[in-house]
Structures are given as C-alpha cells and as structure tokens.
Amino acid sequence: MSDSFVLTTDSCVDLPASYMRENNIPFVSLSYTMSGLTYLDDLGETMSDRAFYSRIKAGEESTTTQVNPGQYVDFFTPFLQEGKDILYLAFSSGLSGSHGSAVIAAEMLKEKFPDRRVVVVDSLSASMGQGLLLTHALTLKNDGATLDEVARWLEANRLHMCHFFTVNDLFHLYRGGRLSKGSAILGSLIGIKPLLHVDNNGRLAPIGKVRGRTGAINALADFVEKHGVNMDRQTVYISHGDCLEDAEFLAAILKRRFRVPKILINPVGPVIGSHAGQGVLALFFVGGSRGGKD
Image 1 (spheres, rainbow, N blue to C red):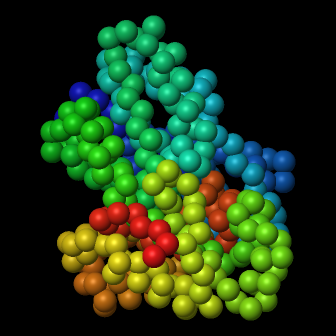
Image 2: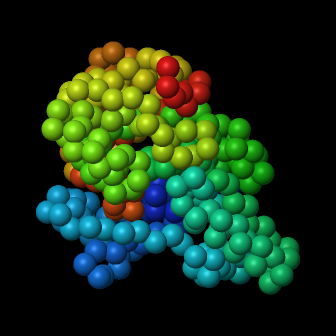
C-alpha cells in the first residue's frame, strides 16, 4: 500500500459515509441551503437523504454552494503539515466551480509548502460516477501505485465512466434551464421521461426521451448493452433520489440481462439532488465510451 500521499475527494461522490470512513478517504463538503439554513453535504450524516427528499417532495427548494479556495486551503493544510502529498479528485468542472477553487488553493499553498504537492484531477464526473472513479483510484493506491501513476490513470480513464440517468420531475430541469416551461408542462401531462448523460466535457446533456417510468428504466439498461464492456466482471453503481424500489428494479434487470456480479445502490446526495429532484435514477458503469445520441 502506498501511504506517501493522501487520496481525497468531495461529497459529490455520493458513496456511503461508512465506505469513506473504512477506507480513510477524507472529503470536503459542498453545501446546500433550505429555508434560509445552510447545511454541509456530509453524505447523509447530518440530514438523512430521506428527510432531504421529503422536504423537496413537499415543495421546499434547495440551493447549492461550491467550495471556495479558502475552504480548500483549510482542508488541504493539515495533510501538508503532516508531510503528505495530496491527490484530490474533484466534482466535474462542467457542473461546479469547485474544481477551479481547488486549483487556486493548490497554487496558494505552494509558497508555504514548497516541498509538498497538491495534484487536482478533474473527474469530469458526478455522483457515483465520480465515486466509481474514486474506488478504482483507491484500488491502485492500495496496490502500491504512486500519486503520479494514479493521477495519470484517472485522467486516462475518466471518460470511460458512463453516466446515464432519468428524472421524475421535469420542472427541476426547467428550473435548471435545461427544459422550457412549456416542454416541462407538456411532458408531465403525457408522461414523458427524459434520458440524460454526463458528456465528455463533464456536463449534463439530454440524449433521448421515452414514455413512462418503466420505459425509462429499461432504456437505462439498454445503454449498458450499447456502451458497457465486460459487464460480467464489473461492479456497477446505481444512485437514486428516494426511489429505492426503482433502483432495485433496475439492478434486477442488469443482473438478468448482463450477469453483473455486484451492484452498489446508494442515494443521490443533497447537492446533486437539489438540481435533479426526488425520483432521479442514475446508472454508472465502465464503458468503451460515454456515448450520446445514437
């Protein structure tokens, strides 16, 4: 195991808090605000995911805040004081300015710690897609890979982390500027469910639409057939916005169709959930490419 550097990330990995503790992975928390109160996204430790989505479902709005450079300086400094270098895997720069803040902080710390390094890698990923990338990085680190070797692997393989998802509430996409109000109203009336992915620039992009929730879940599985590789040897991740039954239904389809040996299901955290809404269902796996419109 290589312990000459610290592998770190942020709360948008949407992995279980227990996993982060057991594997000694420090993370910095993005924040969200509801009814005038600001909370840290600490992977469900302060506010449970169910409580968060219950408030969203009841009509309460949530806004999010990126991590600023000063917060990153505070996060990185203790590790540098211990004589450790840092590899930080950041939430996609296409979805948040937090990556840019981390880069600024790394530059700020060079003068105080000239013999130490803070390497920031843009995951170009989100939610458990970022989490999937992190777990692969952890395996490499535990096998003795150096900081530079892990960083190079992350940059070479991040676009193989496929993200496909659907949402239940079209009005969250409308509020986020990704759908017109008229389309949101019409789509809701006739049961249209959008299909989206995270593209090669780390941004959300629509790639299709289907009728009905079951149709959307089956369409997510179809993306595995189109883009997945060696599915019978992969661990696949599914994240959800308080719709565990749908996540389990999708997992059963994947096991039946592709003989996926292991599937981890976990809630979408409040930062991403603030934009995706209750009922978001997302699928993450390693593929030949991230795909897009066929």
